[in-house]
Image (cartoon, rainbow, N blue to C red; front, side, top):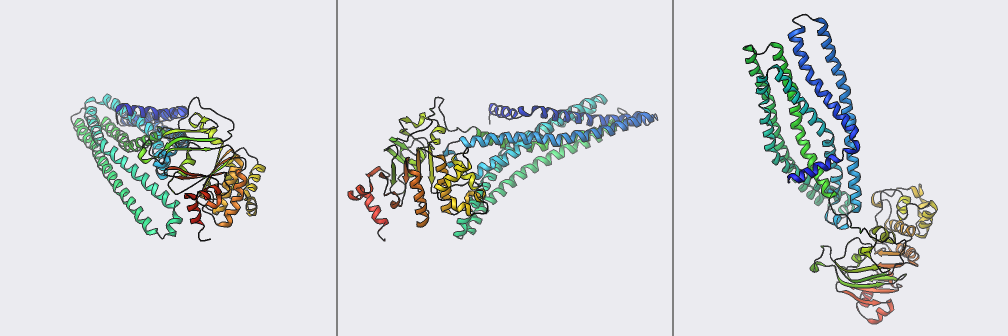
Length: 582
């Protein structure tokens, strides 16, 4: 990474301290005070050995002892503040980052989630931000405390004997050089660990979400084997990390402990030749102990800096993703009537690539208040068309309009406010039935929620439950049947009361009895709205105002059910195939 990018990342990181600057400064003041107290203890020890004890100055001896004890008591309170409020600063910064990241995820285009695994995104939100917050708290605090202690120790040692101080500190540049040389290897391996951690999290998330499928197909062994491969990769990369860490820490430990040897040898010689006295020799030994702790802290914090910096870099990768573009001149119509036109629309999930286009030069008109059904073989782009109306994806060429407004000129919020969607794969949030219906309108009253549930034919079932509308549906609605989840989804749409309705295979996964019940609710929901229905069961679209047969070549046929049967084309073949055994 270039120096400019590193500075940019550092500036962004520092920016998260600003809302909590008062607590952060207090934390740094505590670190400074602890450093000063640590520097005073060896100096007082020198005075006790050289002056107070030989000269029998009992008052000074007791006063110094009392001062040292006072330092210890004050340090205890300072450490309490650093360990509690210092961590609180870090947690608050983490909350700010997590809030920004979550908000960013809400604005990213659907294509981002198509290309990135849920488990990897979760790893960014949890593991990466945890490492960032550890760096945010311990990094400045430990580095500041260590640097102050090292500089202060050098100054005081130089006042005792500058030559002996220079001998001791001559080893510090060697330690720094060793750390710098190990940096590239550590950066690379820490990045690999993060990737491996994210991948294993993604596999776990996928395995847990698909537990019922794997059990149904007796695929436990396959899942375990797949997980073991990923787990083994994680162990390998983590082992490389620990080997590099081991090399780094073993060298750092050797250098720091070599300082003891250097001071004992050099100090002993200086004392032998009368260059220093016994108190100064004792002070030098104590200052070495004071000096070694910050050096060890710096070598330890280096690991944390690497992990925290890697985590923050990945956090920034998501934050720098382009959100769904919104024009500054976007139009905000209060309510659309629902006159939809597709004009020579081309779209592919891989962008502007005609060879991989899902739909090419597609044109279609859906008049206000009409129910239009899309049928045809799989892969024709029916569901894709449904995704393009609420502008979940940007078209490559052509134009889509609603009431004459180009979708690109409309505010996404205003556009989606006017569209209700009921899909085959219903997603319910882990919460109550009331909360899931209220997604249609968060300002709705209890009476409006109940009325929507009645229209969706789910109210009676809800009232039969011990907790009624306060019943928790479980993760993804697992405590409800497919038909019950579908009816909650329909109740959402009733509550939203949109002028445009999209029904994407809304009944295809249901049994006939449940389908009839839901079809009745959907018919009522469709009244007076522009409705686009995607269906494979042709029996569900016989009464549509118009049926459009869509293939990979575009619109193949269109007309009413009777007109298409009379034409004797693809629709008739599909219809007769579905009902040949009845």
